[in-house]
Length: 91
Ligand code: HEM
Image 1 (cartoon, rainbow, N blue to C red):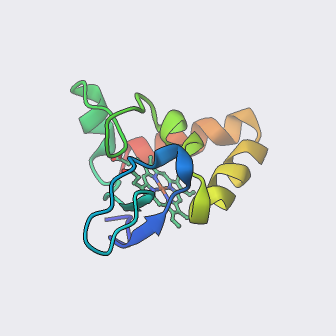
Image 2: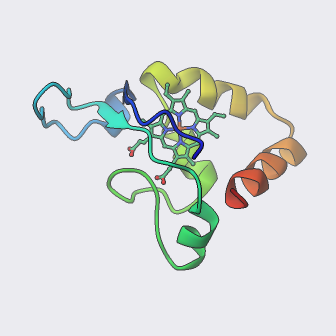
């Protein structure tokens, strides 16, 4: 499924300002990445509020506990970024 289905503190950029039960406003559950390519092809968007239109945009919104994922992505060479995006699109 390529997810841990757990809640993660994703930082203030993704906060919706609402606390729900135990979840803080910046906590989001990792969504399964499987089928993401089809979802995008059929006009779908990403992240809990659909603000990201591409895989790259979704990655760049990772902050909080996931900031190292974003920073590591930013360090990739352009061709490796493209490879990672195609890998995810084909899950
Ligand atoms: C190579 C590393 C990573 C990649 C390529 C990646 C990619 C993605 C993508 C493409 C999405 C959008 C999924 C969708 O909306 O259907 C997403 C969402 C998410 N990711 Fe990651 N991710 C990575 C690492 C991490 C890490 C390390 C964490 C947590 C510690 C994390 C937590 C989340 C959460 C909570 C969401 C949902 C956020 C929301 O709905 O607003 N990710 N990720």
